[in-house]
Length: 257
Image (cartoon, rainbow, N blue to C red; front, top):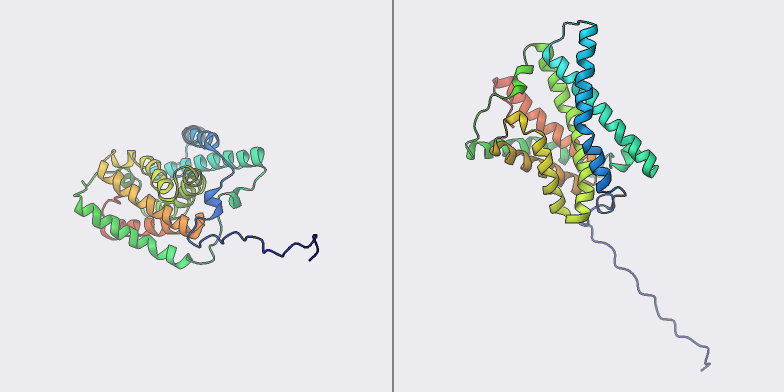
């Protein structure tokens, strides 16, 4: 046998990742906690700037607008400023596109499941609210529903702009970084906390309402994890909001939570 002969030994092959492994977009985001602090730190200034802008316009041009139109206009402008800042951040720091970076895509599977889960989560939250004897709070949201136009605009905002922006911010931008540090369910639950606190003033900081919102936020995060799609989480969130809003309009009850 020749001394130069080397037996053909097959090279070791890396094992295939299990199907249940979190999507790479969640496990390895290219942004960091400094980016999170910058983005979420701009949230309140953007909203205040929008409110001031709307007040200035109404002072200069005294339109007769309902309270709902004023509030929703300020929120819409505030969200626009806030996410414009995120677009600029991703472009300048990482030369990365906005929608693809935040995993805004139609999932290959689970789209109908995401839609159906919204009402199921809403019914579960409502049942838990009854079990916890959640107090009926006179929420400011009710004051926006003074006429048919206000009800229509508020409903449209609640099932479109609201879920899209909240899911992009929390499940699209915040959750991937937290999952990298704390793992799957750790990242989901921690992300649900600031999501609930965002709605705290609306419910007078009632701990029962906040607990229910944490559970709802965790459910949206689970959809994001399973599908790898922020759009799927937004669809679930929109269906959830639509369920409560429909109950509000049909029965004349407060939208809680």
